[in-house]
Image 1 (spheres, rainbow, N blue to C red):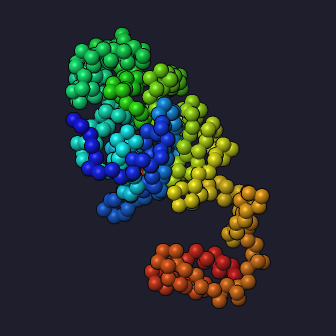
Image 2: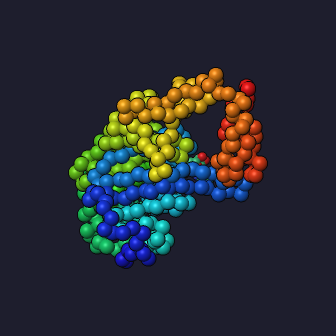
Image 3: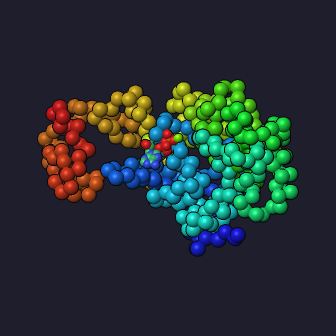
Length: 345
Ligand SMILES: Nc1ncnc2c1ncn2[C@@H]1O[C@H](COP(=O)(O)OP(=O)(O)O)[C@@H](O)[C@H]1O
Ligand SMILES: [Mg+2]
């Protein structure tokens, strides 16, 4: 089946790096439930290049799995673009069956709880994603699957049932299976989460070997310093935002290695621990001095309550001008951000 989007989102002459595989532009994801809407991603932009090994870290609930599932075309973003350079198009332009075909051909996915088909042997499980697309004969597929099972050290388990495998072996079969269609990139969600340290280490060695020998890019979501240490770069998510990059990450003290990244609107997220250590209860002003950004705390004595009372304050939500005396917007009722000034004045 051919894969063609209904129209191109981007001008194909636009200059993009040669080795770009895919890029996210300003992705938002809102989960809708009956009672409340939950914003899981807020304006995430990132790119993945061929042959890269990237990890993505962040506290539980920060949006890592959501990001991975959007990257892999498993769920659509609420807003923003998932651009695959090879297809010259945004994934949102594909129909459901075209998307399934894109996923099958160009990417591998290892989920948090890998799932093997128990009625099939290990060999058939590895061949399975290749059987769906009919591009290779079963002889060629078998040859490829045996090569991959050799690479992950499971040639002696070819005929076994998946039920007889240890969790480390199941993980290795899922890796082999994710590679059967020779994807450009494999997405893995906490792939060592259920493995002990040594088994996890062996699995990482395997991913590294595959990356070096087959040139497959990896995007790995993880909690584990063990994984983050082994990747070329680390992206840090916090509260649905991509707040920083690390080349070598120390997960116990991310602030030591973090490079803050502005988002598409030039917003920089100042991490909680930074704000706590700065302790600017009255806010701060920003200057540039010798090409450095300087944050100056506002001292309470700098604030003249009489002067403030005469000012107007636009509501951040609806833009209505309010008196500084107001805590809530006259028009929409949102909390106005200056209320701190009046707490103690
Ligand atoms: N299907 C869903 N419906 C509603 N909320 C969800 C759904 N999946 C995830 N969330 C919420 O979105 C946020 C991010 O979740 P997730 O991407 O799983 O984060 P992580 O993988 O970093 O733990 C969490 O607050 C989670 O509760
Ligand atoms: Mg998760």
